[in-house]
Amino acid sequence: MELLYFGDKGWGDELFFATLMTIAVSITAMIIGFIFAALFTPLKLSNNKFLNSIGNAYTTVIRGVPELLVIYLFFFGGSGAIMFVASIFGYNDYIEINAFLTGSFSIGIISGAYSTEVFRGALQSIDKGQFEAAKVLGFNKYIYFFKIILPQMLRLAIPNLSNVWQITLKDTSLISVTGLVEIMRQSYIAAGSTRDPLFFYSFAAVLYLMLTFLSMQLLNRLETKYSKGY
Amino acid sequence: MISSFPKLLNATLITLKLLSVSLILGLFIGLGFAILRMNNNKLINKFAYGYSYIFRGTPLLVQIFIIYFGLGQIEYLRTTFLWVVLKEPYWCAIIAFSLNTGAYTSEILRSAFQTIKLGYLEAGKSLGIPSKIIFTKIQIPIAIKQSLPAYGNEIILMLKGTSLASTVTLMDLTGVAKYIISTTFKPVEVFIVAGGIYLFMTFIIHNVIKYLEKKYGFQT
Image (cartoon, rainbow over all chains, first blue to last red):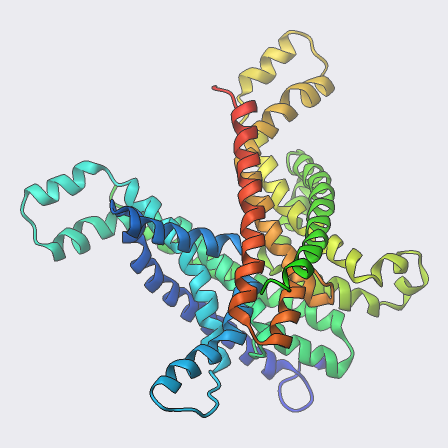
């Protein structure tokens, strides 16, 4: 157990901060995912064939390709792409992007594809009469979306979004390949320097189980809160 | 881009091998745990629930690392014949994948078994069919049909999961793709080829499942 002491002797504090990092990456990725979902859900529901196929391409490609491959694309390709853009503006030095940003961005794109599907499903299962009634009553766009459609959509989406959260949380373990010090990377470092991989990886599993368990408790509360009204 | 294609195709074979072996093993594990889950004994029930909870609540990467890096640490295991299996990254990956997909499969099968209408079982019983035959000839076929769509998703998730084999030095499709990216620094091109191969496999799995659903699907 002394391996887990806080301070210089143990790995307790390192693992604690690594856990915080995992939580931070997951939340950032989830938010980036929501932004992508907000962009692509309208495309997937659009009647325009071209826009529709863009939306479909996004969700099909991202959900059909391994997460690790997407991470490698952004890890190896990200700084190259940014340097290319910078070189157009006459900046030719090497630019390295922050591992946190690359990680959250690549996981965010993946989580965004799942969120898009969830939002699409939720929007499609709202009764058509609701849209029509809101339009007939002449509500302005703000009230139409934020007061009528969104609350009904969230109620339907939250149970599935908690699944997306679980997937996202587990996917963050893959960012460890880029060197970002989250739970998995920290366990790798600790296992390497103490030669006790069994203990540290098992402890990492326990940390992940704790995170999934606690977040499920929170999300279940949210679910009951939002499913009121019917 | 074109020169890397044969290498990636070769690696695809390893990916497919990993996928098929772990799916077959996972199906047996899943069926076993689904049956345990429906047991009336609370202890057995809890054990099966715990198994699926742990494997579904932790990342696959942690599971592979525990099996590949962790188990080798136990001195006792090194003396048994298990060590022949556990020192090979290939078998470690397969064990991790099968246990992981087994946990998800057990949940899929359990919910399929539970949605079987009681009427079918009662009809079987009142016809005097032994309960073993009710299970193998009525419950299992219905459960398989019920669980096809969810199981199709699980196969695709597992296909993506096999990419993690590259973290334990196996040169599967993702592993080779990463190697080519890091030697040629052409991430976008390699991503397009490797991603295209994965998408093609997902496409085929998706359509096979759809075909099976149509063929074996029934109206209740």
